[in-house]
Length: 106
Length: 122
Image 1: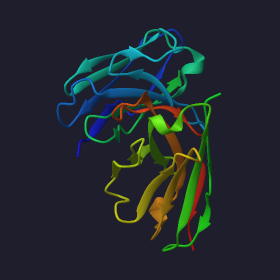
Image 2: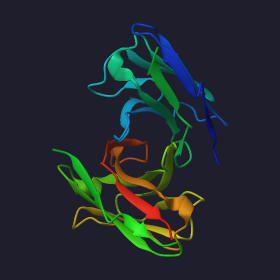
Image 3: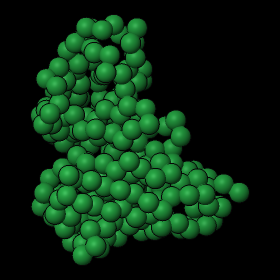
């Protein structure tokens, strides 16, 4: 089974700050990685697929990079509506989610 | 519009059974892999199972293998999850979700339902 880790588990940042979340896979997953945003009480929303491709309709301040075992998710300028928990998810071998990163406004 | 609506959640005693349903609309259901994902209270997302468009390929998370059965009825545009031998740790919101690739191998989820709550407690 492929295990996914994320760091940090939570962060607080100011509006306009650049926010970076990392995700690591326990083995090489090429670019088979998605990023989701989940707001409280809501279903998750796909933001990034294939590690670096922006889903249609998602603001360009969101981006992703990486391949192999190490991946990065970035919000270039944090907005109040970005308060949420962010999850990475691998699909190289079935599906596994990372534990999530909770993002708050400082 | 593309929509997934789950139903069938509720309160069940440990060892009991429950069947979840997911009604799909607004897209060609039979073209897509479908998944169940759950989220325990205050916890992260856990993938439970997925099924291929034809129903011929099925995988389960180890935590539910042998107890849960995923199925689909393409004529009824519906996805199901039969849950047996339920445990307290199965308590969660259960989401059904559509794969983001039409007629492809499973790549993750681009459309999600609103979720249905399952509570396992005596």
